[in-house]
Length: 470
Image (tube, helix red, strand yellow):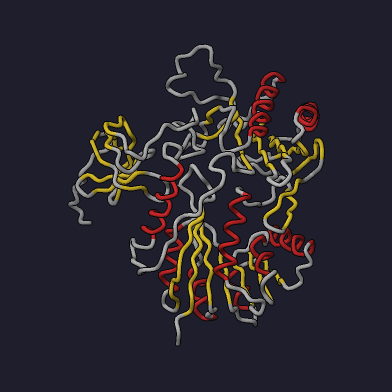
């Protein structure tokens, strides 16, 4: 744009707009004289009065002041916290419409900014459980409760303690909740129990700004296979003395609680993992099952958050891989080796590549449990290890982080030229970028979105690419 560019909107000014579509990220897209505005909690078809909160050359952001004409997609969200909570973005839309919007977002990613051509993008695979599907929830403690506008003038509401989820776009505002629809009823009962115990026992919540206080996070993990729950209390110091009575109470009150641990994070960084871990009651891990495999899950283990949908995702990846038992497979960004195990049952040889050494150690343990002797693991820089493997792949599976694959990884794939590529992604935008480069040598055969996270904009996508003839 030229130096004389004139913005069609002004920050702090109000406008009436019609929302056109949804962006990856869950915000509504509207335009003022072709200038794009992203609007939180807006749905396609909404006619709303908005206020511009941020302005850049290529786009701006706005918030809704009033919905003058609601979208036909809009519904009353079932959760009382939806308007202010960062846990969900799309409860104001029916699940059927969520699925259609996710399919549309994936299709749009393959058209802009570069058109990848025509290939089938299948309908998003739905979740059997649109609610209560998460096997892990992380709640934050705070020494000061963030109050909604409706609660600000209520003198009966204490501001001194909170246990809940972040207000969207903030790091220090915690909305106190006692029920989250994304987890099971027993998990919600435990959330309430811990909250009330902490307040009655006078256990101080950690101040995100002051860095004082004891209780930092409550992490609940539940096995879909067994129903067992692990309670992880993350504190700023060793809190075994204060937390042991709470642990006993949890074990005695809830038949589902099989493990209570105390992780200690004494650093300022707001992460729910500790440099020390103490077992307070029960056992140190629980187990869950995906397909034919059972996995031990400790407090800080990586495990797919939606167990049921993970099985669907892996089934799609296996179908796209088209293995007959004779193939050599490379599995890039393999994590703890979950997909790798599925591939190893159908392939001659599998090579798993992962940058995090701890994840590879978990992967090795999982492989030993199932006597998967046809897997070789590589921990460290994926780019370097790809160049060290003499056996080129017939099939390559890649499941990179949100940022997508490093350009050198993409170039190496183009050099080794596997016959098929199965690309699994949590970000259709970076997936489309990488696939555009791979189209130098590959045709995109089909794409299957999988809904791993109902009530949110997040979407997993699996694409099959085949080497061009000649």
